[in-house]
Every structure is written in C-alpha cells, then in structure tokens.
Amino acid sequence: MFGIEFVPNEPAPKVGYLGKLAEDVGFDSIWITDHYNNRDVYSTLAILALLTTKASLGTGVTNPFTRNPAITASSIASINELSGGRAILGLGPGDKATFDAMGIEMDKPLTRVKDAVFAIRALLQRERLEAAGFHGAQLAFSPGTIPIYMGAQGPKMLELAGAVADGVLINASHPEDFRYALPLIQAGARNAGRQAKDVSVCAYTSFSADKDSARAVKEAKKVVAFIVAGSPATVLERHGIKMEEADQIGKAISKGDFGTAMGAVTLPMIEAFSVAGVPESCRSRIDELLQTGVNQVIVGSPIGPEKEQAIKLIGKKILKQ
Ligand code: F42
Image 1 (cartoon, rainbow, N blue to C red):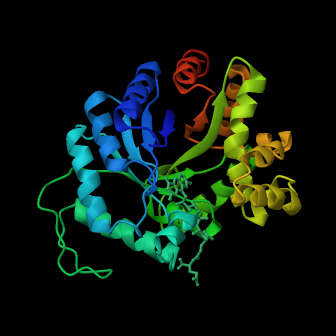
Image 2: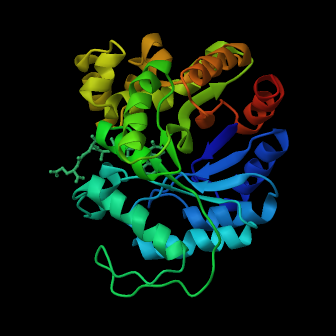
C-alpha cells in the first residue's frame, strides 16, 4: 500500500491535478496537511473527491485545538459523502509553532486527542453527544463508516494510537524509528484488549526521488533542515546527531537564513530523516521499512525536485516493483 501527501501551498485545482496523477500512477491514498497558513484542507479534499475515483482521501493531519471535533465530524463526513465513502480522518495533537502564532494553547494534547477520537466516532454514528464538554451535539445526516488514523510520534501518543485508532501516521523515514514505535503501538493495543493488526501502521516519510541522486538529496535538504531543528533530543540521539548540529540549523532557520540551514544538513541527517535518491535506493529503503512491520508508506514532502515528474517516476520505478 502506498500513499502520497500534499501540502496545500498551491491552489486546490493544482493539488487536485497532482492527486489525480498520483491515483493514476498507482497511489492508494492521498493525504492533505492542515495548517492555518495554507489552503484549507477540506476544500482541497473536496476537489480531490470530485477528480479521483479510487484513492482514499485523508486529512493528514487535522487536530482538536483549531477545529471543534463536532465541526471535524461534519467536515470529514461531507468529504466521505462527496467521495463515495473514501474518506479517512487523520487526527493528531497539531503543530505547536502554528498554535503559538494563533494564540492557541496546546493544553493536555494526549487527553484532547483521545476525547476527540471518541467524540468524533460517536458523532459519526449519529449519536447525541453528552460527554467531553458536549451538550447534545448530533449530526443531522448519516456519514457512513470513516476510519480514524492518529498522527503520533511521542511514546504516549503512540500507545494511545494502539489503544483507540484504526491506524497511525508516524512522521519518520528510518527503520530505527519504527523499531522504536511498533512495540509501543502493540502494547497500547494489547492493554486495550485489541489486536495489533487492527491498527494500520503508516510511515509518513519525507521523500525525494529523482533520476539524479544529487538533485534528489538537495531537494530533501530543504525539508530535513526543518525536521532536524524540530526533533526532540531523544530522536536526534537515536540517529547519532549532536544537539549542537541541530541548534546551528535551528538558529539559521529562525533568522530566515535558509541557505546556511540547508548547508548545515549532513548526509547522516538525510539518511535519518528522509527517503532520498534514485528510485532504486528509495525502493530499498521502502523495503526496509516494510520489513519492520510498516503497512503503508506515504510519500511526503518534498516528493522530488519537480513534483509532477517525481510522481510519474515513483509510479513507474518504485510502486510497480
Ligand atoms: N501537524 C499539523 O499541525 N498539521 C499537519 O498537517 C500534520 C501532519 C502530520 C502527519 C503525520 C504526523 O505523524 C504528524 C503530523 N503533524 C501535523 C504533527 C502532529 O500534529 C504532532 O505535532 C506530532 O505528531 C507530535 O506529536 P507527539 O506524538 O510527539 O505528541 C506530543 C504532543 C507529545 O508531547 N506527546 C507526549 C507523548 O509521550 O506522546 C505526550 C504528552 C502528554 O502526555 N501530555 C499530557 C496530556 O494529557 O496530554 C499532559 C502533560 C501535562 O501535564 O501537561
């Protein structure tokens, strides 16, 4: 199973065009990110619902802080209706940096995500909701069944995903991160009396494919710089990256000096935080990920130096292997 992620930083018809292309070359799912400063996730999914016919369509990921769970239930139910039952709700705690800019406090993210999963599931069953701060909210239409996938990285969030979600979207590209995450998801599932196989594990990768390895790596650096700067110390340690190296990149980014930030991205950082290179090397990394127990690989930003070409190349040389 293969998915692809688009950041809606271009008008929805352009993302719709690329999404349709992705479906045509063999991608099974299309995920749209949710940040207030980009185009709206549901408008983009609506265009995709009309332009595609087979692919699952997901928020990748929305959160319970910027959107009330009842609004989220109605929005994803509308996408499910428009797409003939192809919607998936991707839900995570959200991006703290954008919350700070909006003046929203990220209070008790674990609890908020857990409550939202239960609330949205109940609303999607057309139940009248009287828990978690709701006073009788109820949808006025029948949306059908919609899987809920959780975006998670931290140990508690991963266990929660194992306990309550239909799938988990893990923002990582290296097998080591999945060897860390899988036992936590499995423990969460076990403790909740579920089977680990009921939770689909998705590698939400940073991906860059091109016929020219150096071009692919150069494009990946733009995204990897941000990942390194935003990674907790435990994750950097897992990949043998020094805190000082990450700090240097973080400082350059905060000054807006992206040239210096990209210049400080090393090959070990590319290895740790992206799947980048010619199709053959990307495919062998995908195989390593699948061997850890990953069920679905999602090709995420930047996809490649030139998106349209990269999607065609990935379809021909990676998906069909
Ligand atoms: N974020 C976005 O805003 N938009 C996106 O489009 C997006 C896409 C995306 C895709 C995949 C993915 O994995 C993540 C994605 N994210 C996106 C980021 C996501 O929203 C999260 O920011 C990211 O996954 C990091 O979350 P995390 O799993 O590391 O969770 C954080 C909040 C954390 O600290 N988790 C701790 C843990 O161990 O898991 C738990 C913290 C905790 O226990 N908190 C307590 C509680 O009740 O919540 C309270 C603690 C206290 O006392 O306050």
